Length: 381
Ligand SMILES: *Cc1c(COP(=O)(O)O)cnc(C)c1O
Image (cartoon, rainbow, N blue to C red; front, side, top):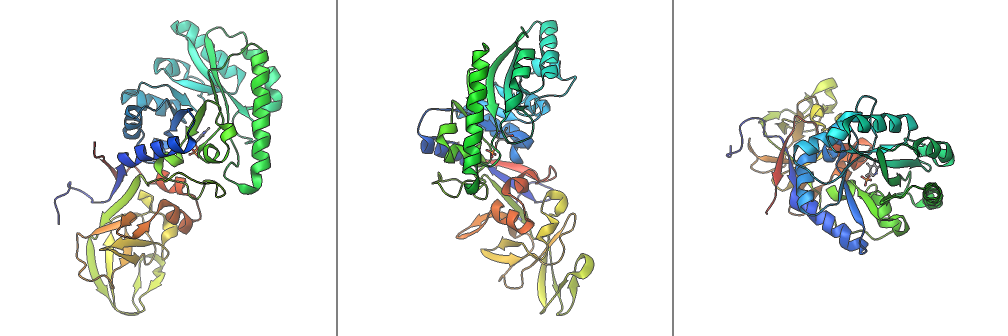
């Protein structure tokens, strides 16, 4: 076995050069100057938020987006200095935490704004916040037709700068929903105009996620929020009817053949005996399972790359192990590299393909690669 770190060889390789490639690729595709927020919630969609954010900050990114204040604090501890928007707001009791970590929450409840205002007064700091409008997602945000009451309640809070206003699209990736997306844009414009007429002045105005950034230039405003596309993900969630910038996958998933054994024709493999060998077969045990995020749904469905050839996953994937039929791989031996996601020569296995096996989207695949899988960062520098 070759000289690698001790311990289980299963690892997610994160290519930070590809991350920057994707950022530059989207920028040149969009052409006009617009500020960019890198969305690094959920540990950077599983890629490692701190490492990705540090590299993107060096590359000149304007903003970071996270879901929870805790995720924002993690970035601050890692040394991130750019502004961080907490896309999910905050929970009662986190007001001081927000201020102490220099985070910017979105606000969609007047009571939360009041809590933040009071905490800012006590700490003698100014708070910053962005107003989130629900224009049709139906999720968090102030309903577009309920903004008057909301504006009236937050208008007089003196310790908060409401420096941004945003909304989120429900279906910017759906061809059949273009009318609805335009309706969301209209509702947002009206909400923006209303707040301005009430005396608010916004530095940041943002609507677009990855799909909208490609398909709706009119939704770029002055800031776009990019998640999946930066990680090279989303050919399954990007609009199919427009051109797309060239993207490179950032995550690859590797392991090794830990054990090889022959089973006889007619013998079965794994839990519930779902695979019966149609011939004498050489079976590799690979140390990755559903606990790692290599989904049980891939059982008898997925495939991997070993020595430049595809090899099928056989039997049920268990918590820690996956079995692969390597009968047709000449010269296979223990310690050989197994590519679960990634490429070799002309062969490729993408997050989108894994998602298809499991009936989900690529985002859920990379987010689901568990903490137990070591992240190894590669960059040329
Ligand atoms: C997650 C998220 C994004 C990023 O979406 P992508 O499709 O990954 O680009 C943008 N905005 C909000 C509010 C989000 O929650």
